[in-house]
Amino acid sequence: MLLRIVRSSFVNQKKAMAVMIVAVAVGTAIASSLISLSLDITSKVSKELRAFGANIKVEPRLQGIAEVAGQRRYLRSEDLLKIKTIFWRHNILGFVPFLYTIEPSTGHTVIGTWYRKSIKVPGEREPFVTGASEVMPWWQIKGRWPESENEVLLGRELSSRLNLRRGDRVELFGRDFRVSGILSTGSKEDDAFVLPLEVLQKLSGLNGKISEVYVSALTTPMDDFAYKDPEKMSPREYEKWYCTGYVTSIAKQIEEVMRGSRARPIWPVAETEGKVLKRLGLLIYLLSAVSVISAALGVSTTMIMSLLRRTRQVALMKAIGADRLNTVLIFLTEALIVGFLGGLTGYLLSLLISKYIGVEVFGTPLRQRAILFPLSLGASVLIAVLGAYLPIRKALAIRPALILKGE
Image 1: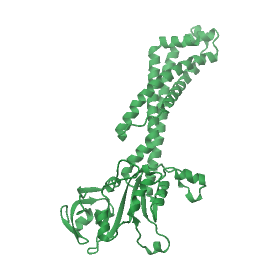
Image 2: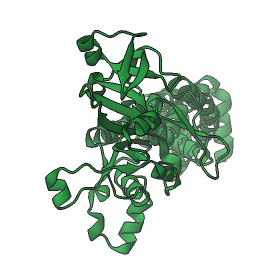
Image 3: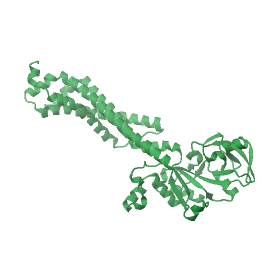
Image 4: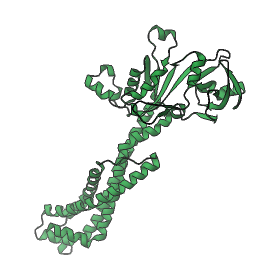
């Protein structure tokens, strides 16, 4: 009897049922696409936020008298490759070393760095490309990057002071260089010459030495646990912290492989990333809830209009013995069927929507996880059940005697 009534309802109310299925499908598609985005947002947005530049700074560790006296210490170039061997090596997007020194004859600051360098990492087929062009995306050059060891970048402020332009020649450490470009960074590079790292190491007698390293790494947003002191953690807590991609745990692992180093997060960058990711996550959840509620209201409105056309039918069923449970089952079964059909359609639509969002926003499609299918069906059933709540209450409130008497 129940299935016959439900079948009759679908046959006699094709337009109303189609409208409800479309409402469920649209709500499910939007919610599923947003869920898919939320599962990928940490890695996708973190990668986009790397436009902020490095989020970890590695410098020589100074302790005791050495720190008080301001002694100059250096890191070792040979340890740089070890950064790509830590537990979170795949999260290291780039790193760039710097060597700072003074040109003895003029007193000008000279900086050595990698402009763009390909490194062969053990165990990986493709070379790892890094350097200032990768890690410092805000560097602006009027001209071009140096293409030979006899070319140099000149900081914007120093260029104005010395009245030097692109193509001019300058002598550093007794060697002649040609200015290939004028560099503007908004930092200390604006008042310095910038040479290839290996060239400066050789000219200054600091072979194999570097002053500091900036590292760009994909990280997990900091939470309350991430701020705990590792030295006060239990072994189990320390293992969890060490194996989570916090900026602090990645910095700790870099310290372990670079001898005599101190790695610390660049907190303004790290905290900004965490706040952006948390707010985006909250926004996605709110939009998902809004899409579910909006679709449920659409189902509810359509089902109430359908109930108004079937008031006498419901009253007659109750008059011949249908109790509250029978009435609820009829409308709930209709809602579940609508939810299932709308869920399947919505899931297929979400595949297209999530692919479009991924390609247009991030340049690559979002990952399609198996869990999205049951989540889509669950969202569609939730929409249908929420939408059926008010119609069921109105159906239960129908008084057969008054309806059948025409009052």
